[in-house]
Amino acid sequence: MMRDDNCIFCKIANGEIPSKTLYEDDSFRVILDLGPATRGHALILPKDHYANLYELPDEVAAEAMKLAKKMAIRMKERLGADGFNLVQNNGETAGQTVMHFHLHLIPRYENDGQHILWNPGESTPEELEEIKDQITK
Ligand code: AMP
Ligand code: ZN
Image 1: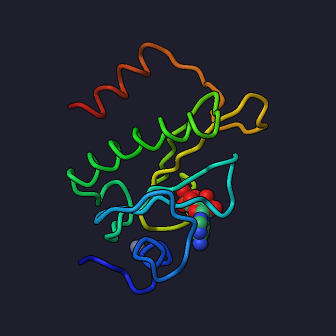
Image 2: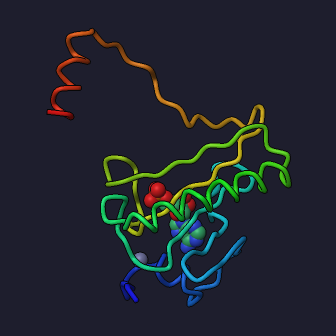
Image 3: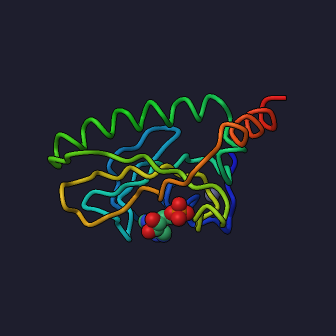
C-alpha cells in the first residue's frame, strides 16, 4: 500500500478521517468537497498516494475516468444538474492545493454563478505550428 502519513487525502480516502462518502471500493473513495463550487461538488480520491496526474499509474487513471463517468451520470440525474465539469489540477500554478491526486466532479446549474472557464486568448498559425513542433518533435 502506498500511503503518505502526512497527507490529509490519504487519511480521508482510507477512512481515518470521516467524510461524506458517496462511493467507495478497494481503490477509490468519492467524497463531498468541504468548500463546494456548486451543490454536490465531489472529489474522486485514489486510496493510494499519487501526488498528481504525472505519477498516476495507467490503470488507476483509466479506473478514475470510468468512475467519473458513472458518478457524473448519477449525480446529474439525482441532483437535477444542467451540466457537469470534470476538473483536475496539477501543481500550485494550476491551482492544486492538496498534493494527492484528485478529480473534481462539479455539477452545474443554470445561473449557479460559477465560472469554471478561461478567457480565450489569440493565436497565429505560425505560433500554433511552433507549439505543435515543440510538443511533438
Ligand atoms: P485542488 O485545489 O484541486 O487541490 O482541490 C482541493 C479541494 O479539496 C478543494 O476544492 C477543497 O475545498 C477540498 N478540500 C480540502 N480539504 C478537504 C477536506 N478535508 N474534505 C473535503 N474536501 C476538502
Ligand atoms: Zn495522499
